[in-house]
Length: 188
Image (cartoon, rainbow, N blue to C red):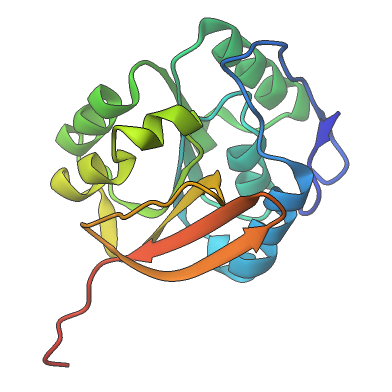
């Protein structure tokens, strides 16, 4: 059973779905991520790409994020996500759910002028063998200059972001979290 670990919605249980296309971030990885970012999540505009049922984005809201955009492609995942937000009582002006393709949605968000402090990506792992979900974040400039992008991946799968600097990797069992930021000017 998924649940919220800390903050204003602490202890609330989250509905999940039984679909092979949805693999919720494990409790261990989620706790490690939020232990690392701690207070940095407060007052942020947060993107939960590949959101599933909202496990990460709802935790971010609980810990003080101002606004979360959830992107999910599966209709059943979107329904469970909306159910979770409604059941917990998250005000509608604190989030947006977009059902759609990740790349197209990021392009749409960029056209609408969105800039994110944090971008959390937990894509289907096979996608990382042929695509870079950070490329569209970079090309569409949706990550603020001082923002961070976080990618969850299996530890055995090597990943090179190319467009961002990986400044930290946290291994948690068989999973890893890579933390990325804009490449700093070498002249500084």
